[in-house]
Figure 1 (tube, one colour):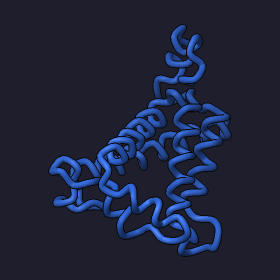
Figure 2: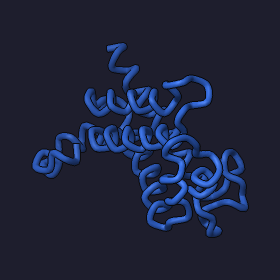
Figure 3: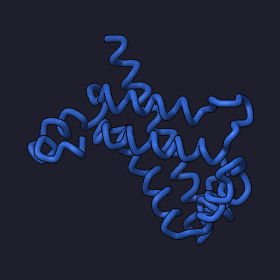
Length: 160
């Protein structure tokens, strides 16, 4: 039972990390996004990172995506949906694998990582997300039992 609770806590806490990133970029809450850089006032939520932070062998690829409205919407919807799915325990396979892809792409944009030649927090998050996708810790807090027992989800396995 303790192992199950750990997965549930990891799921919920990681969900809050993604949801908070979305809210901070949307409203410019002043934590990692200044008020004058909020998405609501028209700033690109990805341009600061893509223009200034990326480095390494793939930097030009990621920098070319900077300022794209499609990339901004994709990133922000990804953060929001990942946060909601993880917090409420729904669509965990889809959230886990897509979130892991997001983390791997962010890791690739920062090669080599600053504090370790290979591993950084993006890899750790990616591994936890893959664990969530395979374990599907939907019990406990959330709507997971309703989600996974619904006929619609049973018919559409890709939404698990």
